[in-house]
Length: 288
Image (tube, rainbow, N blue to C red; front, side):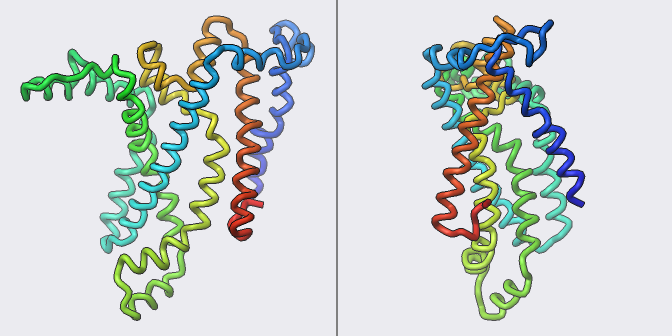
């Protein structure tokens, strides 16, 4: 049963790894990856000498921290609330409705956001002005976008994460809940002393997986929502969008590969550090 998953990661994750060598070359199409001139760490200078690294790292890390923390809290809350609902039909309907945004493309999401927030024609803008109030120009206000991007991300991803946690809850030993009910425990006490401790290993494992990509942003979401609007770059520019704009000017695949390798290596050490910290607190919850 594990063979398909093993083959998947072997073909798509491990076999392409020698291609990371492109990050250390001046890639030329006619020579290929391994015959292109070796330039050492020159491609990595692109990000460090740009003067934007501090801003890019800050935006990327803070957005991912907000996604991880707020996302897990909402997912846990919704999963627990669903578990407390007695009607099975409502549970299935709620899960389906919550899961639906996960499948909506970022292009369509950006279109929905634009049609709601556009100053001249947006639905919300028109509604605000009809009430005699002034609508701020959202697409010129960089300060409003951290909240909007986090909100859109949570809207898209909460349903998926809820299903994961709900599956973990349904796998719990029901006899513990029955015994607690017999002993007179109310719903909050059952959640606090049984459900949350049981979900603790799942929360830690998902956190360790997520923190490994803390330097990798959701390019599709950010680029489709913001595009090339330079007035918003101060609070919305992340490593992926900056590299993409640079590639559009120079088509330098070596530099983009160097940035990707940098993100992966740093993420790897972050996972090792987080796992060591968890192992120090409780070895049973560590990945290895």
